[in-house]
Image (cartoon, rainbow, N blue to C red; front, side):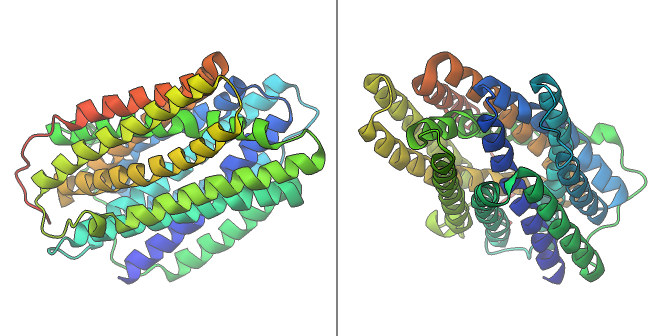
Amino acid sequence: MSAYIAVTAAYWAFMLTDGALRMLVLLHFHMLGFTPIQLAYLFVLYEVAGIVTNLSAGWIAARFGLTSTLYAGLILQVVALVALSQLDPSWTIGLSVAFVMAVQGASGVAKDLAKMSSKSAVKLLAPSGDGALFRWVAALTGSKNAVKGVGFLLGTLLLGTIGFTHSVIAMAVVLAAILIAVALLMPPGLPRGKKGAKFSEVFSKDPNVNRLSAARLFLFGARDTWFVVGVPIYFYAVLSDGTEDGNRAAFFMIGTFMAVWIIGYGAIQAAAPKLLRARDKSVEQVTRLAHLWVGILALIPAALATLAFIAGGVEDWLTVTLIGGLMAFGAVFAINSSLHSYLILAFTSAARVTMDVGFYYMANAAGRLAGTLLSGISYQVGGLPLCLGTAAAMAAASWLCAGRFTSPARDLP
């Protein structure tokens, strides 16, 4: 339990800065005149780095130990935050985009090192039986997303008060202090790695792991297609009057919405085992739930896209409906995400946990990359209707993948 608490505390600290940084970068560069596609480019290397990192992080953790990858992620995030403070306003847009992309790439590596370490640790530390694995992973993942939601609000508040440069420096200092504290207090309990781990073992031969990874790719693609660029920029157009005070108010309202969405998503994710009455369900029954709930998810952006197309532009009723619809999307998405987070640990074994979790989160990062690109492109080409319609298509693809799970050999841990 003490090792679980230490890992969770480190992960919380990281995700607080990760959420704040996303809003800082998005809104700061939108104010500087970046187009939706240019804004999407700022996050591309972040997601590409996640793909590469997750593919190799499982092997690195198996070879050098989970604490090594956790500390490496925290250190790299501190370095990325300090580097962003060196951004020069006099640089050209091209140079600024390239620099921020590179730093965001480093942050992406950091995030996925920390995530893979934390999620793998749950498999090794959770007690067996009585649905404990589902509850423990739901608690970690749900609390992490709630903290990230607070980070979204923190980022917008910092941007509106002390500005971009001072914000990233302050976050770097706080995260460095937390890293030192966690390193000094980390109890034993996590594996130290083994020299015989081979990189080729990263690729799973289990069809359920591969199909779940594909479903995860399209699930997170569905979210990020509207989440990264499209909807925040739509809300900015609705809320800001172009003045400094108007921008500050818009930042706060956008940050509040994103924070409430993420916090609510995290809370439902943590409560998913209870909501689904999963304690006595077999792995096979949980896989059927995963197929059902992603089908429900696909209907929500499809309905919102239809309404946005009918509205033909900014309308008060559309904005209100959009807020309610995206909150519903968040609730259903949280249940889907929690089911996936449990299933990857249920499908894998203790001997392969870092490898399979790394591969699974590689697919997760690939989905975020696809969603990030599609968010900027679809919103610039077809506005809100195309952005939401593309999200619906991604969710439908996840539904197709989730319908192909085979009967697992193991029952619910």
